Length: 254
Image 1 (cartoon, rainbow, N blue to C red):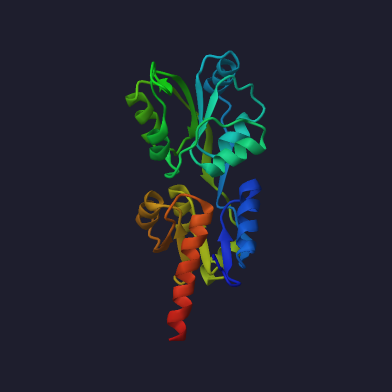
Image 2 (image 1 turned 120 degrees about the vertical axis):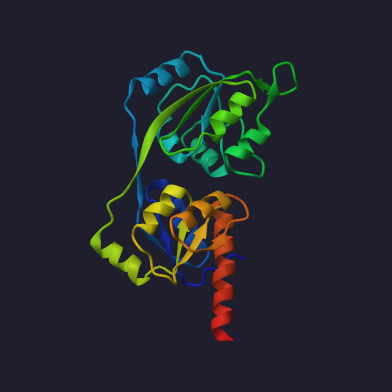
């Protein structure tokens, strides 16, 4: 059982995501402290408007969604295409917005996981290779997914739909982060890790990473990662954090 035993957990994103994660932290006995470290801004460029029109006209077979920020961008669009989500959290956000989801990775929730379950070439039982694919992504996203889809024969239109930047954190919250108000902090991306590192968190604040790629980027940013999720979901992230905090508490008592 995941037990956060009254620990204060820094939740570094607000909005619907922050509310969902905060609710899970409370269910596990923890105290969520929401301090948004990143903000996303929709891109209002011709390529985005063209993508919207082409989706409505049926020019794409698939729309690939890699984050909740993309859901916010397309929730009012006419999506005349199948929809693939990079993981269950994104899929859940899509469904909450009334958007049906046709493909989600079964185990590895990442670009690699989506590529592993991507349908095969035309003429096979699950046709999907050679498909016309629209990928709407952050300006900070890696090229892994677009490159992998192209290798599978897909015609990929890769469009930056939103930009991710660091949020201005209040002086009071910055001071509390440096002083160690949080027992732990949840880190779900490299950009979030870099934003956190810039605030110089207390050395005894446990940094919990959602997966190995994020862990590597967090360590490059100078953070000491002490917990890592076995799968890229919030539940697995909280499980890993619970194990780390429980072990630390036992060591203090011995």
